[in-house]
Length: 51
Image (tube, rainbow, N blue to C red; front, side):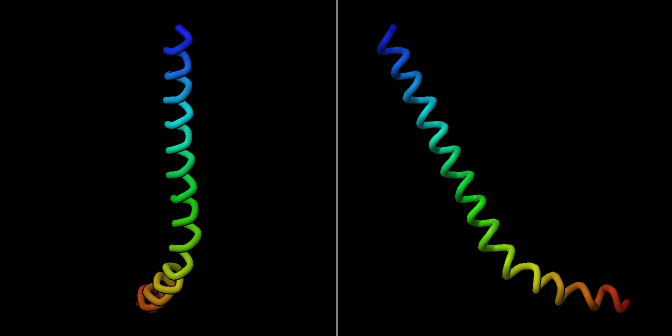
C-alpha cells in the first residue's frame, strides 16, 4: 500500500510539474509573442477602417 501511494503521489507531482511547466511556457509565449503581433494587427486594421 505504501509503495502504491508513493508511486501515485510521484505520478501526481510529475503531472502537476509538467502542467505547471507547460502553463509557464504558455504564459511566457503569450508575453513574448503578442508584443510583435499587435503592431501587425494595427497595420492591417487601418485599411479595413478606411474602407
